Image (cartoon, rainbow, N blue to C red; front, top):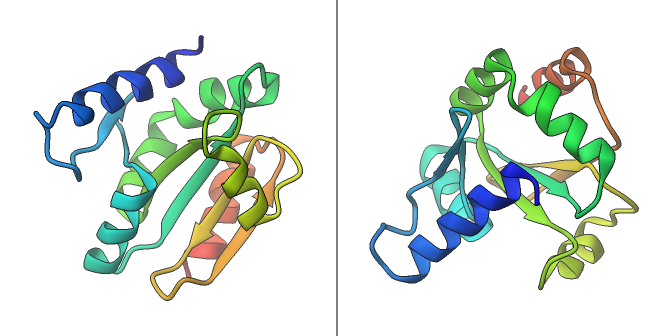
Length: 140
């Protein structure tokens, strides 16, 4: 099990027992990660777009993206400042709904979801530089 998945599972169990408010993020390498339903609420309140990251079990490129992009401090700072970050394991229960809704054909993928509900999907592995370039374009 990847470290990213383990942290999400731990946060899910904490939230399930009600000891943490629903909008409290999981913090992974400094990156604030919210549940999708909480991210939608926070997006409306903060007027920041949601960056929804899709990953899968046994996805080599997801592991590489986690390690070389999402663990990078420059990326973490940029994401925390400009977006509400959420993630979905498309191989877990309910993940198929996201695959259908966003028209995904593989992982890793991410979708920029604006407060007005419009979204843009990017699929496939991106380097740190490519990822930051895309985010900067989509932020405007």
